[in-house]
Image (cartoon, rainbow, N blue to C red; front, side, top):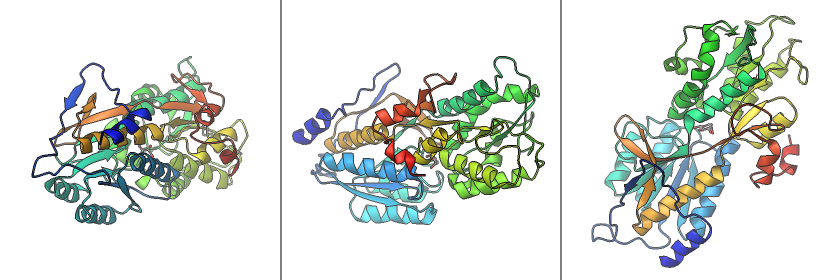
Length: 388
Ligand code: GAL
C-alpha cells in the first residue's frame, strides 16, 4: 500500500486542499472485519454519460490511466445517454465487487435506486463533474466552479458587444442552457444570467426568438435547455429560432452557448441557413461562447466561427478523483474544501478552476488565455486542431 501511495505522491497527486472552511471527512476504517482491507487491484467502476462527445472519451481515458497507474483495476463504461443503461451498469458493477464508483450521471435525478444499492453494499460513490441528486448515497463530488463558467461566457459577450462601455444596441442574442437533467446546467446559466439580465432589463439585449425576454428569470433555465447537451438538438433548436429572423435583415450579434457541442450545433444551423447576413468569416458572424475546449471548438475558434470556450482541464479533475479513490481505498482521510447540496445532503465537494479561452487571449473575462495556452499545456496539439 505504501508503495502505491508513494507512487501517487510522486506523480504530484498529493491532496493540497486547505483554505478556509475546509472540512475533513474521515473515511471509515475499511480494515475492520465487516470491510476487509482493500487489496491493490481493487476495482473502481467508472460510468460516463456517452462516448459520442470528445469531452467524455477524454475523461474516461485519463481516469483509466491514473487509477490503473496507482495499481487499481478500472471498469470503464459509457451509458450512451441512457438512464436505464447507466442504472443497469451500476448494478452490474455492484455484483462484480467494485469498491468505488466514479459516476458522471446522464440524468442527475435518475440514479437514486442504483446508487442506494451501491451504498448498501458498502461501495463509495463519487459524483464526477455532475452532481447525483436526491440521494444520501453520494460520498464526494468533484467538479469545476460552476457559476464562474457561466460568468466567463457572459463576460465574453458583454466585452465583445461593448456593453460595459455603454454601447446601447439593441443587440440580438440567443441564449441556450445545458441539459435540463444536469444540475450543472442550472449553475452555468445562473452565472451567465446574473451578468446578462441587467442588459435585458434595459433593452440593450433582446432575443428575436423571444425565448428569453426582460421578464425571464434564472429559475426558468430549463425552458431554453438542450437535451443531453447534444449537437443535433442544438442545431434543430437554432433552426427553429432562425424562423424568427429575416433573410438579409435581422442581425444576430451573440449566442450564449454553454458547451462546445451546443456551439457546434448553432454554427451548423447558421452555416446551413440561406440567410446572407452572417456568412462565416464576415463581420456579421455572431460572437459564440462554449465550454470544454474540445478539439473541434479550438479549431472553430481558430477559424473565427466560435469566439470563446471555457477550458476545464479534465486531466486535473481525473487526477483529483484518482487521489480521492486511493485515499478511500487506503483508509486515509479525504479533505474537501466545499460542499454542494443535492436536495438530501451537503455533499463534500472539490471545485477546480477553469480557464476561458479565445483565439489570441483577448477578452475582459478574468484569466482569459489564447488557444496556444491549451496546446502548451499538452492537453491537445496543433496537429489535432487541423483535422476538422
Ligand atoms: C456538463 C459538463 C460540461 C459539458 C457537458 C456536456 O455536465 O459540465 O462541461 O461537458 O456536460 O457533456
